[in-house]
Length: 300
Image 1: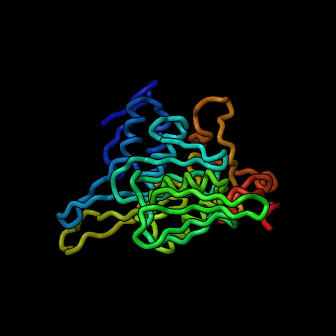
Image 2: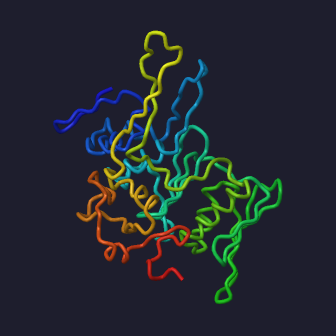
Image 3: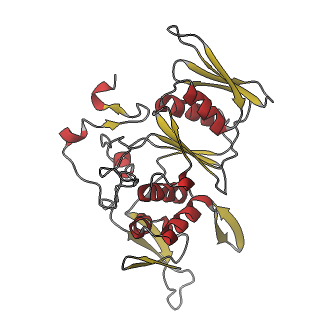
């Protein structure tokens, strides 16, 4: 398949090729209906691979969230992103995706929870906390969950909802939970085996990875030699994938501003390389997980 627009053409040869940073960035640059459709497919349709003659479903976290981030960069208001504003604290995205269920959290740039699989339900019994004031409970076998907020400075509040992960996040958001509170709840749920699938944090495609491929077999050799091939440079990463540098270099940071500088609907990311700003400029930004999106000088 060939995608083109504005004088550019990109050949999309396989699902595997599209997992790379450069390919996702290329689709973002094209900014055409065909590019959008390709990203939506990568985000929602499970891939398949054949191993030893057996075909199996493959749901790559990097592919799905990488496509989500690329689509957000093209248009942060795209209806396929299913964006819900939770009291201006964070965004919830419920994606009707195939493959194994997955919950994705970010540590940098944008406070958001992305659910890949709209029908995810927490497994009971449930006993979780979201920050210091909110508790989420449900007995074994229950089809409802009680979300309670206790605060000495306010009246107690309670919401009864379904075991749906999305509904629980919405209920917690209504009770004034901040993004770190929701992240805490989901991490606890994963550790206690309440989540039906994986919990991923900053599952972004990276550049400069080493791949292995089998070389041609020389006469007399019984086994083909294995060659190491590095694809891309570790430093040449589009800043639509901001978690790559902070994951490897402690202290890197990113802004949490959601709006594009020109007031457009594009997400605040581009396909230029991540800038090497001086440390004094980075120190004024927000960073961190589990100290999510707090200023560096407010870590205590």
